Image (tube, rainbow, N blue to C red):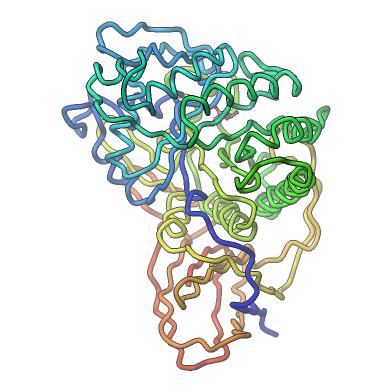
Length: 501
Ligand code: AHR
C-alpha cells in the first residue's frame, strides 16, 4: 500500500518568514579570515573579499546574517574593529584561541552584507561588554548625524547610517562556557537595561533575547527560558534558541530523527511564550517569536584541539548530514507560526555549507537543501497529513554533553508544504536507508493542475561527501511531474533522499 500525503490549502499553519533561511558569520577559525575575507587569496578582490565564496553564498539567497558571534562576541569590543586599519589593536581572542587582528569589523561586514544582499543582524556583547557600549554601537550604526558615534561613522567613510534592524542581547548567556556568563535573573536585568538604552537610541530596532542553550544532563534549560521570558516579555521581539546535533554513535536512524527534538523544544518554548503573552504589555507590538539563530550538525570537530586556533570546527559533511539539515528546515516550516528566524551556523569553513582554501572552494552536501528551501519555499505553511511507515529510535545523545532522547513513531517520510500564489511546494525527506517509498500525493481542496518541477538531493550512499575535486552530493533536477486537473498523483521517493516538488 502506498504512503499518503494529504494537502489541504485551507489548513494553514502560518506565514513563512524568509528570515528562517538566515546564516551566521563569526570571528572563529577561518570563517571571517580565510573564509569570506582573505587578502592573500588569488580569488579575492581589492578589498580582500573572496569573490568565489561570495558567489556561492549568493546562491543561498540569504535574507539575514548574524554577526560577529557566537561565543566570540562576549568579549568583543566593537570599537577595536572600526577606523583606520593600521590603528586597530590586535587582541587575544579567548573564546576560540586566536589572535584577533580586527582588520575586519563593523564596516567591512556591512560592505560584505550589501554585496551579498543580506540584512545584517548584530549581536552585542553582554558578557564583558557594558550596556553603554551596546548603546554606542547602535548610535554608530543607526543614528544619521549629530552625536559623537554617528559622526565617527561618517568620519570613517559612511555618511549614511547602516540601519541595523536586528540586535541580539548577548549570546548563550546561560552557558558556563560563555565569557561573562550570568544567571537568568542577572542576565535579564542586564538585557533589559541594554534594551532600554538601545531603543532610546533607535526605537525601530528588533531585539532578540538569549534563550537557553545549555541542554547538559544536569541542567534545566527551561528554568532559564521561563525567567527570561517572564522578565523580558514586554521588551524583546524574539527568544533565541540554539541546537547542534551529531551522529556520535554512527546510528543513521537515530541521527536523522534529531530534528524532531528541535520541534519538541519549539513547542515547549511556544507554550511558555503564550503563557507570558497573556500577561504582557506590548502595545501594538507582535508577540515574541522564536529565533533558532544557531543550528547545524557539529560533532566531528569537537575535541580541544579541533575547537581552537586557526582551523577550528572545520567539519566535513556527508549525505546523512544534508538530510538532517532538510529535517531542520522542514521543522521550521511546520512551525512557521512561531519560528520567524533561523540561522545556519555558520557560512564558510566553520561548520559550514561552503568550504574554502586559498586556491579554491567547494559546496558541502548541506549547501543543497538550504539552497532549495531559500529559493523556493515561501508563502503560507500548510498543515499536511502524512501516512507512512514509522520506526522507533534507541535512546541516543544529540551531542556528547546533551541530555538523552528517544523518538517513537518517527515517520520515514518527513514532509513540509508551502502554498504561495496558487503554487504548492512539497518538501519530502525519505529517511529510509534502503527503500523507495511510493506515495500518493492527494489534494483535498482544489485540483493539481500544471507541472511540478522536481529537485532531488541524494548520493550513492549516506556517507557520500563532496570535496574540492568531486561533487558527489548535489541537487539534481528530475523529470517534471505533469498534472491536469488531478485530485492526486503518485511519486516514488528514493531511499536516503531529499526531494522538492
Ligand atoms: O557556532 C559555534 C558556537 O556554538 C557559537 O560561537 C556559540 O554561540 C555556540 O556554542
